Amino acid sequence: MKRIFLLVFAGVFLVSCAGQGELYETPGRIAVVPEPTHTATLQPVIEEAKSGEKEKAVAQKKPVETAPSAAATAVPAVKKAKPKRDDSPDFYPLAVGNTWYYEGYKKIAPDTMVQAKGEIIRIEEKDGIEYYYAYSPKVNIRYLVRKDEWGAYMRVIRYPFPVFGFSIDVDIVPEMPFIKFPLKEGTKWTHRAKAKTWVLFLYIERSIHVDFEVAGKTIIKTDAGDLEAWHIKATVDEGDGKAALDEYWYARGVGYARADASGHYAQVVGYKIYDEKTGAVREKAPPLEVEKYE
Image (cartoon, rainbow, N blue to C red):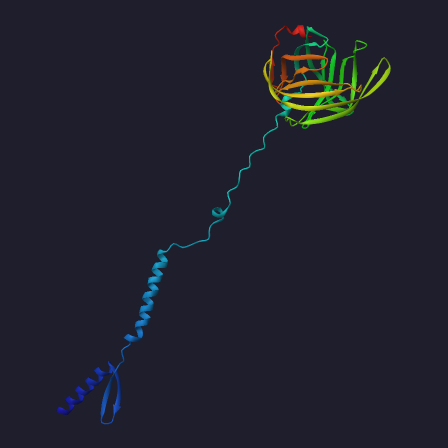
């Protein structure tokens, strides 16, 4: 009985030892080798895991850097200023129906005031080019004029012939640019042309030479109001070798507003101007009855 108890005790002891270590035999007895602890081996792994978790936590807290968007990197567009509109054409309005009233005198009779009306009657074609036909019946003067983006031009002028006392038509070839756009103080240009006409069945042709200069912009006082005007000088040689100075003022929204020429002086006192685009009318009545100018 005592032996059985000892055997059972030994079996239980062996089983309990088997859970804690390895068994090995030595001569004469059975020994239990304790299972080696793994704490030292696992410590670096544990520390590395903790370190990785810390780095992950820091990475989660740190804002994620992303590539800048195209909108963020785009260079702001520079707004280009709109080019200023050239208002030069406003100083020589042309439209059928435009009417001007003038007062002036001839240089040979400065004490005799003359009233006259000028009006654009129609459009007339010459050599395939359209011109405005402007006529002043009281003084029997007419012009064929036109304008484009580069300036204003004259092709035909009718004026009283000084010797015979009647008017003749003079054809200027090539047409004469008497205003150049853009209007700018100091601008100069020269025009050479042939002035052609018939007088009593006699054909006459002369070479003319005109030097133009834009003298500047000024305000002129007239019976039609204070007008902003460009002053243009023209030194004219009509083919006789004698140069004469003619000066003209062209007002904004009015056109031909004043002349101080070698043969006459004239100044606008009233007008009726049609807008070239809208047809709207701007009008300034002359100081005298309209009939006085016709």
